Image (tube, rainbow, N blue to C red):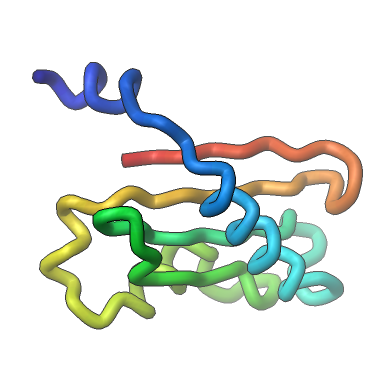
Length: 98
């Protein structure tokens, strides 16, 4: 099975996306002009890493989430969920990547 087929069949779990949005809000007031972003890394339906964009010019949510993973050997078989709230309150663009 190709990587594109795996992604097409992947189900997005709303619980993990909600957690991304919760994390993103922690950056409120610190990231402008960048958007609020939260990231969650999931392995076997369990969160193994979390992060958010903490401040303008700092590491992005994905980098912080990866850095928080204790067992990096799990990353290869994990799913990265990322939320991006460009308007901070109105529009939500949700992305999930494997």
